[in-house]
Length: 119
Length: 112
Image (cartoon, rainbow over all chains, first blue to last red; front, side, top):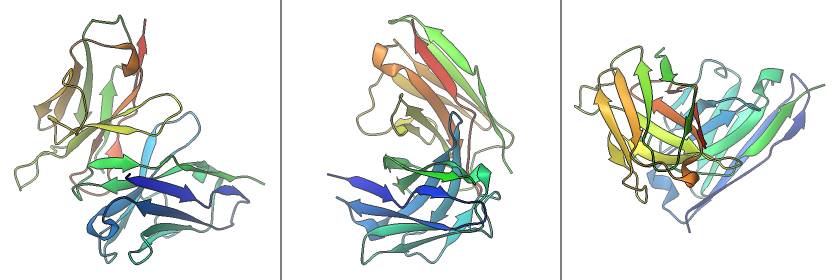
């Protein structure tokens, strides 16, 4: 079964850091670009970041650029999101997403992990 | 950055009736490779989003054929030919022609 399982969310103070992980199974992880998409409470979807299948190319939303770093370990079938200098507006559920085409064909979504930034 | 605007923001539909959602982009989503990078996703209550349509009009695997997508350039439409109770949720369109990718605000569909 194709599956994405996020972990690492929780409560953090403004200015703090968290690292999210996403364990992939059921498909050849190293063949696909992967993204993070977030959703603030009672709000819509916001694309956050993408990493290419090899890990050598990344892109970010302006709202997180310079603070978040996406990476992957293809030997461990795991995607990461290092989140630094957290702000209250980063409070959201973060979804790990498989991109079937490399062009936004998000065919598999994880259940998400909640990040709350509050003092 | 490209801005995606969906209309309406909410819709109430009787089962068996058709429904239509519009998605407009601030720039053309037609790439030089000939493809148009516009997608549709549905988020049912309490669940992560699920894929519906890729590249304007292609259904993802397993998506019922009552869902169809159309459009070109900057104007796109998702149609449900005969709405069923399980179609309730929030529908999002998304572009991916360049970075940053962006979703529309979402259209909430309620089943009467």
